[in-house]
Length: 231
Image 1 (cartoon, rainbow, N blue to C red):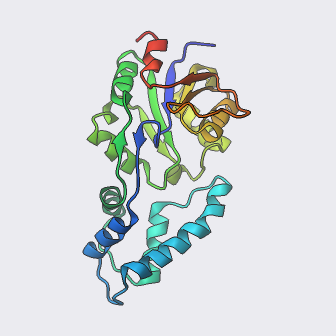
Image 2: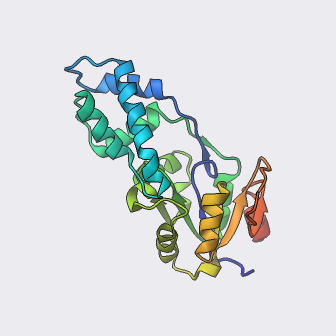
Image 3: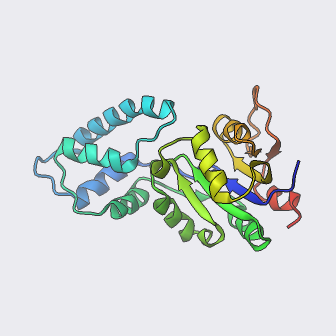
């Protein structure tokens, strides 16, 4: 196994944990929207639930239905008028719906890799665009250590689709066998990375069973990455 020249990371549940509070999100939406039809929280939730349900088959074939597409459908269906840019809507979603919490060791790992000359990137299945994910990373002072941030919302393909990994490899600027890919979802992150020729590093802090998949490396802490690379 070659020493890598680049280390790429999944985002959600690898670098950042998160929960969601949909009711808070809907209440926050009603605070910023004009509501000429006087739709209720329950009516908005009903439309949102339907959209979530019908988008599952889209994601099942590894294509993304973005938060911005979701918002446009939701607003037109409910008659809500929201005078915000897409970027402002993303920030509102992060503030009102998500409850991000940084994974232990994430910032130290990024800094150690960056300062030692490794290319560092993020490749995430996310309804949010890369700029929105970058804003979360900046809040925790880790964006400055990343060379690039990719999300399925921007690139259309969801992991483990080969195309998103091929693009990540091109952005990393190294051969696949010179890249480690770190992620918690073994069937998306590890299978996809290995299929693209990268070294699959399974982040498995809860010691979940691997079933029939064999990662190249398994770690319980992100800090094991700089330790293994002696940086």
